[in-house]
Image 1 (cartoon, rainbow, N blue to C red):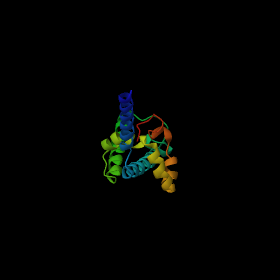
Image 2 (image 1 turned 90 degrees about the vertical axis):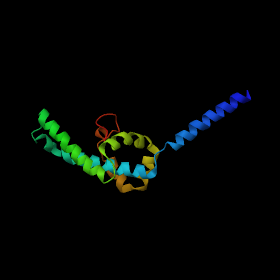
Image 3 (image 1 turned 60 degrees about the vertical axis):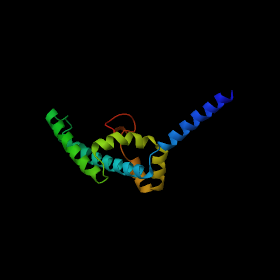
Image 4 (image 1 turned 120 degrees about the vertical axis):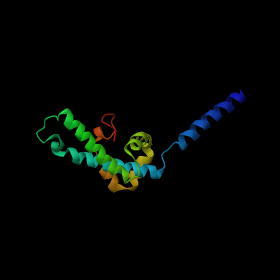
Length: 135
């Protein structure tokens, strides 16, 4: 019976220790939150008023879509470079960083100006509702 208790305590302490050590670092949270805000604002401006679709509300041709994709990735690469990130790094790491909801909310509560901008982002396109590309 004692051995079982010891094993349970060791297993639980391992889970608690690993869970705490996997939390996002404050500097990482800041970098990714600021990047997400900038990306969201860039994308909102890019598509405001259907301007990038040609302004007539019609879906662009496949060629125009490819060109828009290249243009967006170029702009995204430039934007992320100021955070010392690549598009691939951001896409790989952002789900992990934003999974630490307490760290993100804690950072935003300390920066009301950023919180206001973050809350204004379109939820359906920023990876917070399960749809979109998850920028």
